[in-house]
Length: 347
Image (cartoon, rainbow, N blue to C red; front, side, top):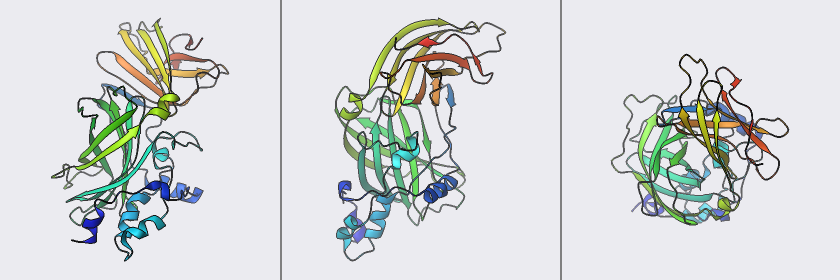
C-alpha cells in the first residue's frame, strides 16, 4: 500500500491550522488567473448582476496539504505544520472587503480519489435556499488539461437521506489551475431544506464541465463522494423573514405579487410571482427589483431568476432589515426604468 492510499482516509482537524489572509498582490494575481468563468442556471430566465466575475479567489491549501504531506517522510505529522488559507468561500460568494462566514460554514478538508485525480472538499455553507461548496482537484496523470482550459464540477446532493431536494437552478465557477490544483465553486439551488438544525449531506461530484470540452471527460467512472455533518443554527439565528404578500400593478401592464423577503448573513432574497403578463406591444419588461434603503442607496444586486410558471426571486447582498427601512422597486434593467413606485417592505 502506498502512502497515497494511506492518506485517502485521513480527516483533517482544520482548527489546528493558522489562517493566512491573502496579500493584495496575491488577490490581484488570482483575479487575473480566474477570469475565465461562467454562471450556469436551468431556470427559464436568469439575470446576474455581477456576471459572476471573480473577486479574491484564494489558493486551495487543503488539497496542497495532502499533496505535500504525501511526499514528506513525516507523513501525517507534517500535515499540522502547514497553514490553512482562510476565506475560500468568501472569495467566491462574499460581498465586501471584510466578509467573514466563519460562523456559518463547515470546513471539511476531506479528500477522495478516482481515476481522474484527488478531489478535496474544502468548505460548505447551507444558506437559506442553496448549498455553497468549494472543492479542489489535483488531476491524475490520466487527466490531461491544457493550460487555457477551465474546469467546473457538478454535484448531486442528498440531505438527511432525501435526494429530491436539489433544485434546477444554481451556478458555478471554475479555475484554470494553480500549481496543478483546480479550484471550483458550486452554488446549488435547493427546493427545500429539512426543518432540522443538524443536516447530514451526501455530496457526489458526478460530472465535470470544461471551457474547452473537446476530448475532455464529462463523467467519471465513479463519483467523488463525501458525507458531511453540518449545522445551520448560527445562520438561522441571524436570518429574518418578512411576509409582504402585496399585489402590485406595473406601468407596463404586468401584475406581480411580492410574497416575502428573507435576509440572512449571506444574502437577501425577494420571492415573487408574475400573475399577469405585460400589455401587448409594451416594450417594457420587469427585469427584477431594486432594493433601496431609506437613505436612497441601492443594495448591491447579485442575481435573479424566474420560471415559465411565473415564480421568481431576486438576490441581493445581505442587509439587516431591522436597522433602517427598505423598499422594493420593480424595474426594467435594459431600459433602466422603474415600473412602479417604491414598495416599503418593513413598515
